[in-house]
Image 1 (tube, rainbow, N blue to C red):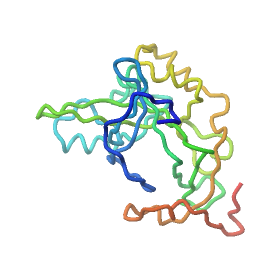
Image 2 (cartoon, rainbow, N blue to C red; image 1 turned 180 degrees about the vertical axis):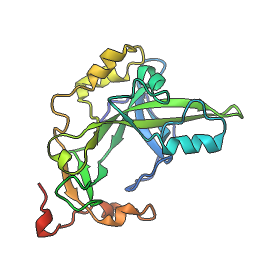
Image 3 (cartoon, rainbow, N blue to C red; image 1 turned 90 degrees about the horizontal axis):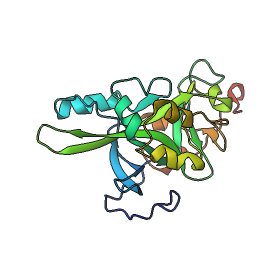
Image 4 (tube, helix red, strand yellow; image 1 turned 120 degrees about the horizontal axis):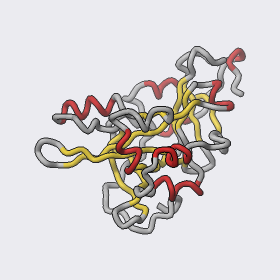
Length: 225
């Protein structure tokens, strides 16, 4: 809350530390509330398609919508309404990415990518009403083409917004698509990020704990950056 300058307090659940977050699990987001004040909220990861008819179809749609692409987020039916009026920041201490066969590393080799402190993914959130009348809030991370050293690991990366763009990004009154898309045009998208290889134990959702982000050494043909 200090890092994102939230002064409205927080009444939701306190989420346990999690080193292997999976789709549909609860995460924190930062957004503007109805009084245009920045707030911390808890939602599930993966945007529920607005047309989901029941809990089963809602859950299925979430697993297919954990990420939205900068190139098409304003066009895709699942994402476009949230993009114009319900944007958020998704805080994390880092994230994993898996090497593709196009880079210098063994395919599927996991890397942990982080900054100097908390990082914030550009995101969107929405509220789905179930047939019983209850509401469920969910969110997705916006991704973009990877740049610089991150492109040697994977061809995509999350979109990160500099602090000076947070207010505009969170403003629900900003609903012009071109202006919103312009906020994601960052001169140095990977600024302040670092990466190192980690154990393949992270590939199993049964594994958790801080040991998952411990650095490992790669073999000689696969030296890091």
